[in-house]
Image 1 (tube, rainbow, N blue to C red):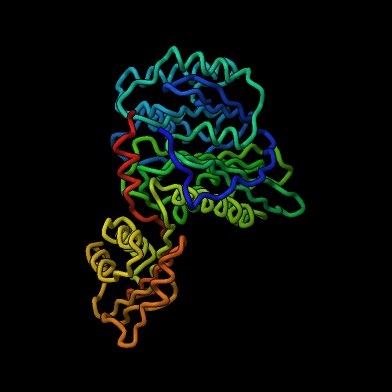
Image 2: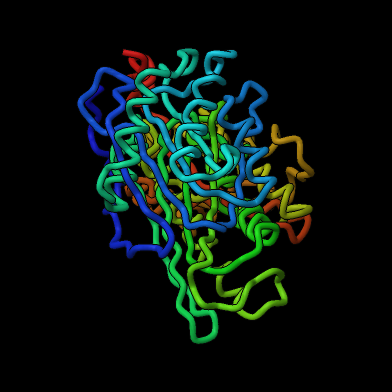
Length: 408
């Protein structure tokens, strides 16, 4: 499938190496294409690992085994297959994943449970074991590659390569945080919502690393949506190699914990935004800020109700400030709301306040705002202090074209 680059694409950033992380790619040829489609990440011994996974009950074997692996808290390698999700494939799919894990584990001399495997692509086709074996064998001895090459390799319907970087000072010690991600469709915030991998050289205990990822996820990956569909394979992993000289971080009270978390959260939010900017067929990036809700969780659910509404998304695609559709989406969210306290705005301009349209409302500046690529929507429920921000994209004919032709 030849896809045009998203008009919302951002350039791939400069990203430094992360000590203890080695990237390699290979051509397993999981589909009929001439490109690398297997990314292999080797991690230093003792690397702490954390993960968040899809809540889709029809998840892949990779997700099932990944959940068990992160409970142990240590990882030596990550293998990502593109072109075949290996979901809904029964025992044959499980055998393929176990073969990959065991093959890498034998090479590294580690337990197979420390090799985490992810797959993305078409659902319902077992991962071919012969191609998997040959691809892994090739990857194990390939020359190290760049972050960009690793990110390109994990893509499927992505139209641009996605990465994010931040650094943090833990006292006098500088640590790096680098992440890559793939995703553009089948994106809904029921964690996770794509395949994403974030790495740092900081020393962190596995248990606390998981707490940091859970918190970062709540305001990034779990606050985006493209189409309301939660994939069978969604995974985000966070690895801390411990190669930096910072004192071990085990709790929020430890020196450097806040600085490290802020950098991790920043990378996660950047990656999440890139997925939305590559939403299938997307022409506009939409930020929805909900305030005045009963709680933060309630605000998030209201925001997602708006963001997932085809009527709202098509109105934005048509550059129509149809605030009536926003009212509908708020009302159907199932969250506390009061029609007579509800206020709605676009681009920093209120169109309705306290349950009714403004008498002096001038649509001209709002219409001008909606012609742009970055759209802001404000919704104030007026009943509490809860707030949340979610991100989505518009819904265009391009989404239909891409997904109607996906398996070819």
